[in-house]
Length: 404
Image (cartoon, rainbow, N blue to C red):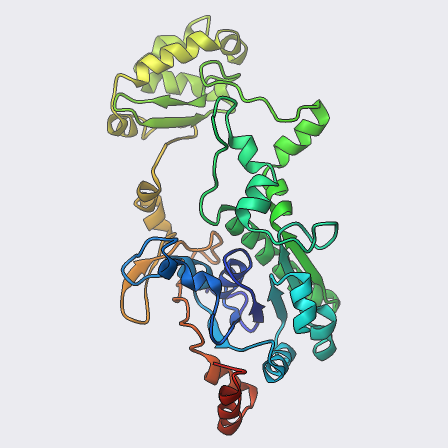
């Protein structure tokens, strides 16, 4: 069963991708995630398709689906006194309060740690931020392009010296990495509370997620005094078989033979050039390093003699670690993706079939079964009835604008 979080209730007051995607991961694992959205505007990410910022996809709002699948949506105006009281009542029944609202907004809306803990002292309070909970920029907004990609050094590390402009980020790249970190932090906090009876305030920022992702570069740059770690050209890498090679039809193959002496003879056999294994210039790692330019030049010539598809077949039995450079669409069609259930099918409420990327964790050798993202406020009445409200109370809240 893929439900190790069953029985856990998450109260999510968050928008866009970074923090909501953490809620989606927890929902995948069986948690009940109550997504609080403004009754009128909802999560701002819902409007990306209507605004034209992302492509129309036949009725599937993929940005919302990927980061909000499996949740319940309740439309509550937290700024309304009655709406805020409903948030407190929901917090009383929840294990985790999850938010990415900035400190001034949390204080203004009275949903900061002290406000939520006043109604539930045992609740785990989780904050996702751009730059962290402390420091001069703790109240500054942050998205992954700014806090993760630019400020965290990831974009600069991936930009080559001869690039005319910095390499730009992909959609929700840092957000998705940060979301996994939040989900892990919540899991640890739940374990701590269960084992030791202690609750937690959990903080994860996009900046800290970037630094963790780029850890080798950051640590080495401080130790070696580099502003930026040097990037060796592919024509003369320290290890010629940790490199990419182009095929006859312009595609690329990636090799990562860290134990190069172990895998080099097998590669030479697969290249139909067994004599290279005993060539004095390439006989071991030291020799290949000293003659790396010549080694790369020979490998370039060999790989350019066959097409991408020919090489994929030819190298299928190669022992060392290698892979074809695939487009995102090709990755979705990888046989390993299908075999492991990495992109399961599901349906929107309107019956449209589509695929989402599953979370990377599997339990008990079972692929996760995903549920679609909720429509804006679709679960408001159900959740409030379960909370103990009567229909006349719900009607009164609707009339006042406190709920959807």
